[in-house]
Length: 192
Image (cartoon, rainbow, N blue to C red; front, side, top):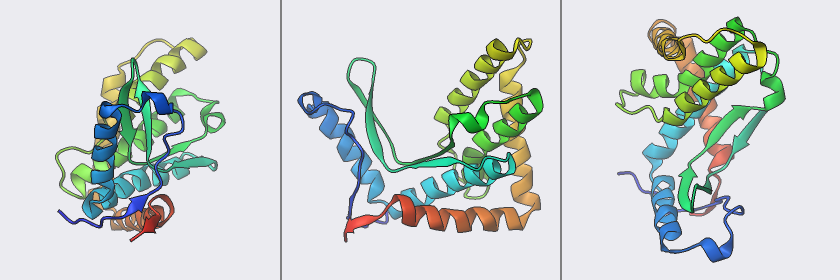
């Protein structure tokens, strides 16, 4: 394990001080452990950079970058995210099925990149997968489109990205370059 022992900015403002119990500090310690593992940081940045490249292809020009943050889910179940990159909601508003296919590739790109280009068994994309399924449901409700096989679309998106990784070295190079920039933006070390 490549340790760097730095202090990072972690957004936790949404968790009230009186709720910061032992469970909170255990989860915070897990997050800090990931933040102090250089390999983990590099993989997170590669994952998010692959999303960025595909979102750009989708025509998304307004993105958000999220530094590490903690939040609660349910009855004070503490969770964290090391980083996130995403499209602002208004950028994803006007959708048809073709754009949804492109979005599926963008959302699958991060995990597919880590599995195919980095050889990892876990691409860290379970949240991306869940969010994609939710977007598909919303798409059908909002547009009146007939339900379709969302899982099949997700699998095809992952395969599409994996094929591009094998066939196009410039895609891999672009992801690596974007990851380098993200690492500087999202993981600014306060103290070394």
